[in-house]
Image (cartoon, rainbow, N blue to C red; front, side):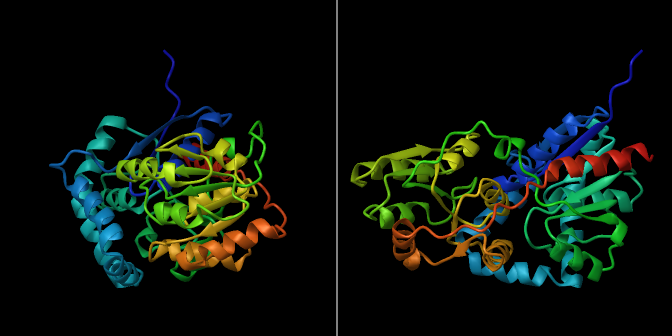
Length: 361
């Protein structure tokens, strides 16, 4: 009787699409590993309205959308070691029942986390002696939130040396820290994509459709040099309908998409991307050498992303009021782009780290 290959379970949370896309990228690489693994991605936060984790998700999203200043205060408070530990304990208590259920159903051989919410639930079970399998955290922003930091992870995969230094400063052993970059799907660097179209502006607001999408389109409608807009509204149905109604007022074609898996082809066609600074979207764009303008950063991790990408010369972080002048200058005198960053194959590196942990058991 043949035995099944080991199962790697990659857990994320549907709070922004980047965490989900990172999980998909890791799963893609795990399945392609020569040792032969199964991989399953799961959104850890339930859509059942009577569940605790559903209300954790809804509260978090509403806080970002409606009360961003309060979210910023909470974010900064939770970056402090003691406060982060208290919040981690509360979340672990609220979410561990769902994690316990998933472990009974799936029986995975290793866990990967691309969001800290499922991680804190697993850490709670590990602390109670209920979970004893390799666990790997994949940090998906250019910043390490305090919720990520625990000595119960077998490995951390971080974007840059800066995040590695943060973990070292918080007494995480160097042997557990791996600078892998942020994992993206192979389609973003595998070729066979459409050619770039001069004058095409891609506007995105992340998987939740937040940010300056509608306002950016309205402001840029009459900028010379723009020949076409591509607008992606994610899961935001109201925003999709609003943009559809606006199209008649725009003097150039507007291609409109809701949630789509066709982002690599859309990025390949674009001359410029205007987006909120989600780290996954920005990493995907950088891999395709697509110029980036960052607008409407969510306080906390997205502001850290914007600051980092601006500092290394991969993007410009601007206000809405600067948008028209900046885009006008871009199309009159396109900037010299820095050399294309090397492809890191981050997801493949993470798959290799997992293989080492699983085969060592």
